[in-house]
Length: 126
Image (cartoon, rainbow, N blue to C red; front, side):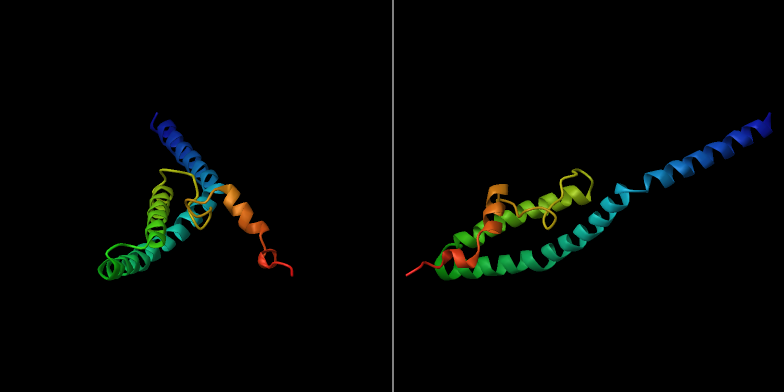
């Protein structure tokens, strides 16, 4: 009886190893690679970019009494990027964050318009 129990345990262990091997193939490796890359980008955003934006915002507020609207818009978009990155890295979402998708606040139409515009199109003919 104990031999059959040991054989079934060995068979179950072999089956679970094959399940794990199958699970780690294909898109799972791609997702893990993206998670690692996004984690590095997220680290750089939080450690360098956020303090820089805080410093710029404080200086502008002290000099002008308000923060420039472009800085405020960029800061809001950055919050969206960080939120999306955290959701992706912590496996709460499968939506790829920036830089694997467009910057927050830009629609697909905006991205397509930027791709089709060229610097020569802005030059008027005499």
